[in-house]
Image (cartoon, rainbow, N blue to C red; front, side, top):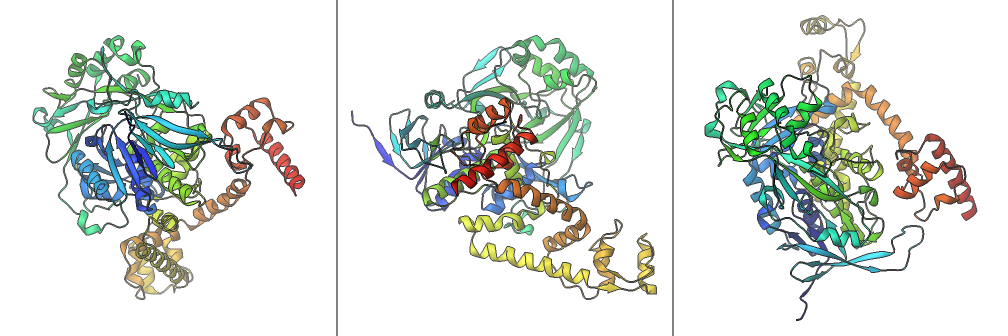
Length: 639
């Protein structure tokens, strides 16, 4: 029988949030791209909570959008409720979160993929990576093998120059609900059971992780009068910088808040032996920051209740998502425990809660570009890299797609560092630190978070999206004009002086602010906690009309200038360490005085810079000093 062969530039394996961003980036940069999925119906599926954004995750979505990705635009078209979280705190931790219409989100993203030039969707299971040996490259790479294509379960070979693995939670997946185990992917979809063996044959180190999801309930069986209604923001802010704010001012759907209680916890404790997690049936490691209700009850035994959010799955379904109560307990226990929660006493379960375990990789095998260190042209992104969450997945998929395209163009691949983006923090943590559980992005992980706010993602990253080719000239010029308007207004405020006249003193007194003894600039007045840019318009007749996003940036840049300057100085020191590159062929056994643990870790991780080396667990400041001395002498010898 003749073997069917197809030819393309790039193959993307998986069509979840990572795969969609990767494939769109490649196709938009002009490469013939094929995206594979075990089911076309699973494109951009939200198998867990149908929401986008949230604390720190909102930052990722804004950054994806600034770089030319799709997630922000898609949620703006399909959300049913939107909220800006952490408004009572500083701007560094403000995060947008939107509840999506689950079916519409998937449908809208699929439509984008189907109509994207250079992109082909293929329903097929990729079961083998095709790799061949190549001559070893000096200095720039140690890759002795390169990708040549993929093979599907039906035997078709797709010859290509790059492959991006975005398999999500589908690799050898199995779902557990008490004693019942089904060997499927999320939502009962087909699992991908063959690719793991090919990866192992290539020497790729695999891991087994676990996540879970709560039950979905029939809206008609719930009593919302016993819950606290949760409303969206009165004025919605879009995720995408390209979305007209007026188009997202819609009638929003309410969510609801209720709580577990001691009755709930007693039922869970009495049935822990029937939970696959505690009975030892589950092999994979679960997410620390998204625990099951069993974990919450056991690990936080001092808590007499836990929050439960009841959230709609969409406009055209009665299914309600029970956020905060994911579980792998048997069906009878699930029903009993859910019915102890106020408002759920007569609930009817449409879909049972379940845990899912799946194969993924140890991400230390990746460069910060998300290319495998040992195989040229093989990239990966998303939960396959050991992370969790739609937003983390989409961010990695976008970077993997960009870098696979730059690789084929013969251009330098991009690496966003920790001072540039939350995406940089996410990827650096994955490829540099020991991760023994699904990684979740949090604002506390970003040491320069005052600089990396969600509101300024376009100012930080649009130029990179433009240089790559994913951001249009028109969009890029718009952000340059915005930047210029901000700078001009800040300059004006610093040079607009108001005196201690009677009307100024009356104004300050009215707003509970101390009177002036001498003249002060408008910028100095904005720095007072009780005053703001908007409030000062009353005594600032020279002020021009500015857009809301420009005014927001002016306010933040002026009010937090001292803190921002301090972080910028910290970034300068950080950048020096990042610029000290380490040759790819460096033999750490030649570096005298390195401690054994440090040598082992450096050999395992093969960092690309001294900065990355300094963040590896087990590598001390003394080890870094030894490495710096060696690199200097190494450089002198080469010279």
